Image (cartoon, helix red, strand yellow):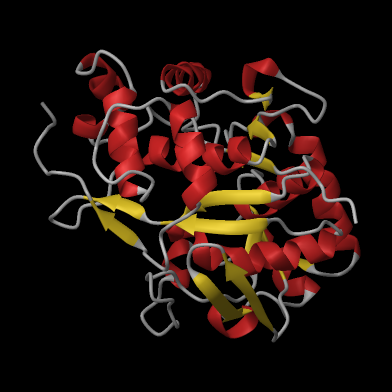
Length: 322
């Protein structure tokens, strides 16, 4: 049986300069694609118009190039599955949204943020509220009354059903959509289509077969698997890699200037030492040594993903690098 070529993607959000954790994720998405002789897609997830900037998208391309990571299509390069900027794909998301609404699976939700986070509401382990479905059964009269003062978001109805999958890094994961998640938003009240819908539509249309991303997104995967099913796309293989953490347990963010790629580039003549450090964290090297991204491809072919259920890697010092 003919096997499809591996198609992976790196899909950053242009809301600021990337940090070392973003680059680590990009590297771990890039290595298995290049090791398999596959195709790499760069997609810019600029859904949020208030936070996204094209200048950041251009800077991301420059940073990836500096680290020696190339891509076959996407970004400013374009390609046959474009556009590769989510802000230019709104009509596509609207088509899928209307398709789901025509099936009777979508309804308006008028709940405020305060109501969603009410003390009596059940919450997930990460603190996010599990939606109770309170707006699912509103009458047309009740909806018309609420619409006079609030613009609704739109939620996708989920069944009382368990979704299970085996992650390439974290192993088996399962979740009951109704009890552990609840109906979830696919279009925000400001009209912006939500990440869950957009990412599934994009990966489906672009033929993505392999998704490597941070393990903080692991629990969103069952919702996306349900959407793949509804939209008629095969689901990719998932690898949720550990997050990089400081010894104090601090997660990296784009506000952390010490691990900002601009700071790192200013303090390193080239990327080789940083790539060697990331190769060590990934279990591809036995010690930190200067290597290129291409040299790590050969190591990945021999060793593959080596995280075995790790959710975090305590690898970064709290102080700024020298």
